[in-house]
Amino acid sequence: MDAFDRLATVPWRALRIAQVLPVLGHVLSGAAAEREIDRFLRNRRAFDGDERAAAVEAIFGVALWRRRLLWHAASADPRALLFVLLRDLSGVGEAQAAALCDLPPPWPARRPGPERLADRWSLPDFLEALLARELGPEADAFAKAICMPGPVCLRTNTLRTTRRDLAVRLRDEGVETVETALAPHGLVVTSPRPNLLALGSFRAGLFEVQDEGSQLVASLCQARPGETVLDACAGAGGKSLALAADLRGESRLVACDPDAERLQRLALRAQRAGARVEIATRPPAGLRACVALVDAPCSELGILRRGPDARFRIDEGELATLPRLQRGILEETLPHVRDRGRIVYATCTIRSEENEEVAMAFERDHPELVRNPASEASDGFFRTYPHREGTDAFFAARWIVSRGSDAR
Ligand SMILES: C[S@@+](CC[C@H](N)C(=O)[O-])C[C@H]1O[C@@H](n2cnc3c(N)ncnc32)[C@H](O)[C@@H]1O
Image (tube, rainbow, N blue to C red; front, side, top):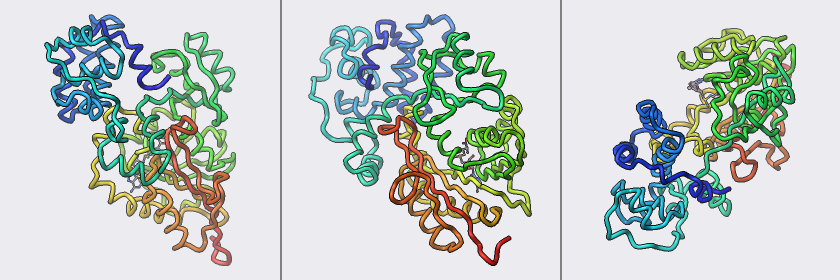
């Protein structure tokens, strides 16, 4: 099913235009769509399922497709944008779309679909240029893929259960899944919109929600029981918890992040998962890890499908500062890796300035780093893409540290 097929399945007849319209205005003026949707639904407890679905898809759709809608409507009026979302993208009849949107004629003239990448897939100009530069002939397929919300993917907590047993337990709880194609412990949820966080299996720590690509990045560390592991940019711990499961509770895992609020969430998740994790804002002095993961702050262009308006909220000026930050974190982490240990650098972006260029400059300045292939690509770098693997886009590089006679 593509993005337009999906729009055609929305119960648009349940659209409550007077209530939805003000929210569209907020989102188009820069308010975060997810937050607006949450607030809207909290205040509409009396809405039935179809009314909720139509409202969410209207807000989500206008947030995501705003540039394409502008092209069809030739007007920035939120009501006209919603009208063309229904008529031109979702296949609702013109008179019905006008009635649902309460839009009097004359209605915007129908136009054939746009040719330009940015209009077709609703991208800001800078992102259109960036995709063309980074992905060449695959830019269109990538842009199309990020117009669909990603699949809901789970990672089995192998400290507590197996993937097969988890799938059975979830089925008993009314949630259908299929196994991920690439990640060994992943399940993709196929039931529509289950409330996963309310499930007994979630409260019992049997799984975490984690994209398949993110699971694969954690597994590139090849963490083995008995090894000391440093997660230098742990955040709320998506990859730390995967590492903890690989270590089977028999090792030291140090998870660091300067953001105390994220670390607090990590602590709660670790408790639920039964994972032993040492939490700190910085790596402890003297720590010498067998493997370190630097899952660095980045432009997050690889996870754009996770938020309908994420692409319109990127601060272009901030992008230029990222390579220096990423390199700085790598430099701070390297001394904490012991001789013959491994260091993995990862991002969830497709920008070569943050990926290959950071990795190669780091390697050039450290002759003790020996690139260790993380994929079958000729350069040994690991990459996933939504239009190829169906995962979020990730980049990773892995090195062995070989200090020779200076070994510590
Ligand atoms: C991509 S996120 C990490 C996501 C996490 N590893 C996961 O899998 O859920 C990057 C993290 O780097 C952290 N960070 C920012 N500046 C940092 C720095 N100078 N050193 C270490 N971490 C930093 C951010 O707070 C953020 O949590």
